Image (cartoon, rainbow, N blue to C red; front, side, top):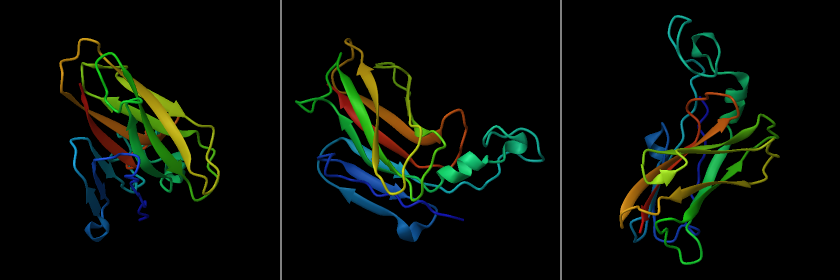
Length: 187
């Protein structure tokens, strides 16, 4: 089973907590500094199968939930340097749009329409889901990918939000790919 390597660039996220996890506990790493914004990253290699007995499941749109070749190709892509850009003052205020950015890197040319899907469960952010897709990634060429979210102008001060950013391929339901959760406060 392949494991994805995932490095978190903390320089762009002044004052955050970052955790990298995978299914080998000896390879987990954590870095911490001093503010309330945090980032948690998770990688997991896909097992290549989803549903049981050839029915159900959701691994890539194939019978039984088996992962498509596209999803299998996506396993080697890493997601690094998660950043929530709240503008020049660094404070995400009610009514403002913040940009989530991650960097995708593939060890080989990948033209499977890789991208990110960012979601949250908060009533104070819109849209509920933000996506950004690329035509492809060139081998070993880190590529930033961004998505925007706007805080409701009536958001109460100090509202906490969690945004989950997941690697995926356009029109696929890949499981077990790199993901990152950013926790932020809307002031």
